[in-house]
Image (cartoon, rainbow, N blue to C red; front, side, top):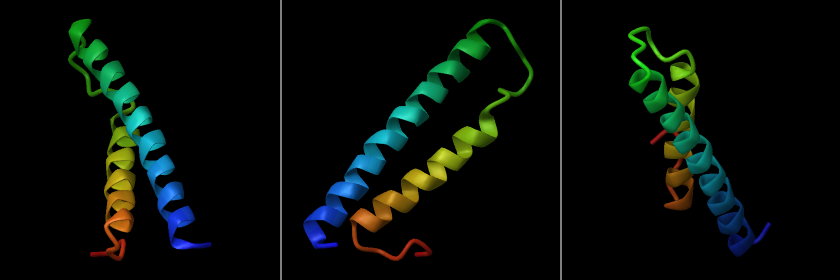
Length: 67
């Protein structure tokens, strides 16, 4: 895969991940706005998306995922 294709693939994954993260953030805001005090049930999924987004952003910047 050439560099331009790799970057395009990473950017598409970032856009997808941000969309899923924002949808979960909105669900979480609605969850608490409805007066619930228990932890948002999809919080762990939201945390995984945050980690994935960081990994993708590092790839885009040319860093190794573990850095």
